[in-house]
Length: 244
Image (cartoon, rainbow, N blue to C red; front, side, top):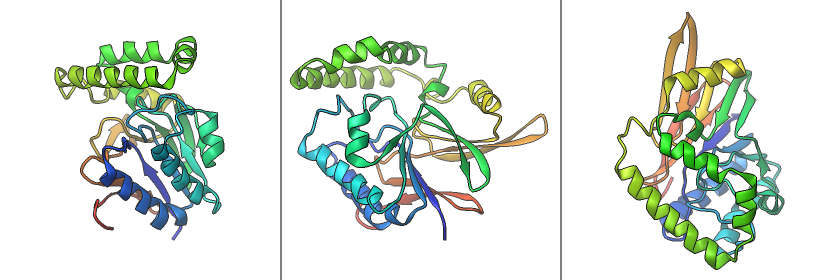
């Protein structure tokens, strides 16, 4: 049966080979047979530039190439951990980079897809940080630094982020409902798919008599999380780390 796959928030890194193994099995056994694969951000725990061609990164890129070379389109939306993924990564993998907001035709259903961090407006500190690091001049400056410097900076930023998140309430780090509705209305659609919050769920509600749906993808910390969509419906599923 025709189907499209969505994943997000894998946070791949050499320190979590169990996640990497699950991802590679997913690519070989499932993605290869899909109509398309969408990766909605935070594929990596951190990405400090396309020139970081470590053995681990080559391994992940090979997994994508094996799928795209078979004619399966793979699309990527940047997350807050890997917003520096660029055109070199795209060329080396065959993955198509999308803008932070994209409206797709999902088997006849117009659907807005995004990473999801821009929906969390109550997390004021994060939004201020996001605006800062998305400045082009600052990104160019960072990418001009030696890789060893970038790794140290990234490690320090990750530690600071983890500490800051521990001090925040869970509600602050969730989406702002009014912003969700605003983005849907701006795109003139009733369906949305995103990640980022690590709270997999299918939300449905009525607004002025119109039915809306928001699907939140899960993270891959404890098991794989995959959204499988076909012409009939969408289903949030998990994948065990040891086997499918």
